[in-house]
Amino acid sequence: MKQGKEVENPESRFFTVLLAAAKLPGVRIHREAYLRSALARHCTEDEIRRAIDETPAAAGITVAVLEKAANDSIRYETAKVSALSAAAGIPGILALPATVPADLAQYVGHMLRIAQKLAYLYSWPELFSDEGDDVDDATMGVLTLFFGVMFGTQSANAAVGKVAGMMSEQVAKKLPQKALTKGVIYPIVKKVAAYIGVKMTKESFAKAVSKAIPLVGAAVSGGLTLATYLPMAKRLKKHLAGLPLADPSHRVMEGEVVDAEVVEDYESFATAPAERHGVDSTALELEEPRP
Image (cartoon, rainbow, N blue to C red; front, side):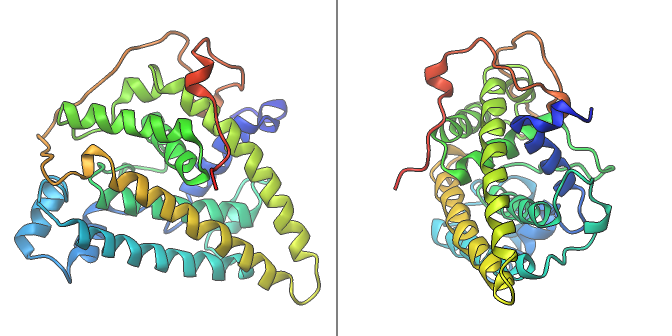
């Protein structure tokens, strides 16, 4: 990624932080291992195996079991990120780019962790490849939209629902690559990234101020993290649980992929500039979270 002015715009700033956080040790969740662990106390071996091979929805895992597993994961990640916010002790912090503050990267890393866990419980496919540190653009796109849902943007809610609908209608087991990287969803991803980039700057400043207070700075920082992370995780859980992919009647067929309309002038998220695409501004409008 180019340094300088590009890094200064909110969209590029967000993607820089997201990529840096995704490379931290322990951030990527292995779908099979997580589902086996999360469902072990509530499901039979046959149900777990089917949830892994297909989806929890296709395995007929009940809403109550999924909600309990989701709440357990949210509590675990919230406690962990709140403690680390005070200590700034996530492994690999020293390897971060100079443009990414350590506390912000660890916060985003835990957002990535809970987003993956909730996605896998509610029948989304594996998001990260086992090969190397690279993050493909479709994964970058869907994670950006998940973050948008967590931040309360209505356009992200609609876009995630559209992606889930594409996968559900055509029983796809992989993310719709074209829709997320070249097509109808891509412009929304870019606007959501720019919006979150601005929010992250404001919230990082608030944390920096809190840490400047002698003795109580760490406690204040941890409290800010708790106050923001928990409701954000719950917001994503609620949204994913209500999508077609979470419907127990939904079945997945191996190897099928769904794509959508392609638009011109595709650029990688890692280098995408902040200018707007020629799309319907009403559909892309971002809103503050509703009370």
